[in-house]
Length: 430
Image 1: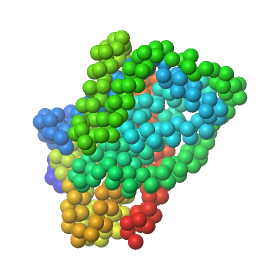
Image 2: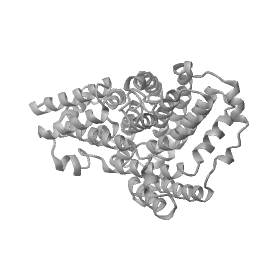
Image 3: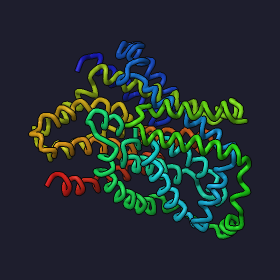
Image 4: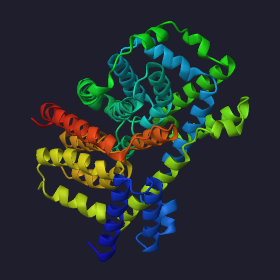
């Protein structure tokens, strides 16, 4: 690597260390690192702001912004209070049952929506129900972020890296469903078992609070039925457009912006009320992170690391698959999995095209997708959903530290990736 590449890597590691240790606010660390990358010419304004693969991913930023606005409008209706009471009553006030219910709902929703949209919708419900039952909210939010990343692995639209992989590999929505959905079902069951162990100290049952919940009528929580139906109608159209992305060819960010604009323009909710729920620090943090990782791409750091990992396999499909699976999980734990997948996709495409064409090499795409998606659970900055959950928690004065998330995430990532190995061997490699 060049001198500039080493300097860029040093800047990134220092910024990451500041984020991990929380010596300064993560937004300041990300913006500071991005500023230094621009200062030393590791990247430039054009690459940072206007280049698809090495700059700020405006599709992700604007998708987040639009969905936050939609959630802000929905919050005015009282629907989150309704769902909180409904969920608590379904679980009969039992904390672990409640976590299982929220995890399953989150994972299933993430298979149809992107995982960021899902956590934006489910987090307000979680705060309300945990407050009602006097439960610590952090374990539930962490579990939901991880469930969103696991569930999002199942489909093309579930996680942004999957969209990149589908585009590069010529894969369809049904391809992801057939090859990855069965694995995700197994991983979700394993994850629920891990939740029972990892968060075992957070399931204190309070019979009196449970009785209070069971006595409530969730329908009384709805404050504006007309706005509720308007909001749900727009949200349904947005979800359908997400699923039909391969046919409509509208980016999810465009669809979400149209939905958000329609709600703000055609309802009684004011612009100030709609944008009150926007997590501006989270959006700025993502922008800084994209610039830093883009600089690593520009200077060849990520490409060098990826090439060296691939060169170790010497053309062996089994070894390549396992290295790609574990290597993607490890790297996605450190850098956001979106730019990582954007960087690795051309390499995987070359590997697939270089084989004898019997179709078995397609397993490399699934290894990349599973490794990147599950690896995003390892740390607080590994996936967009994690960052959004931490931002929401901080906004609601219940901050989740980098290490509080990561100490659980490392265990979940290792176990779920390990559980994926037999699936790959039995279905593709033997």
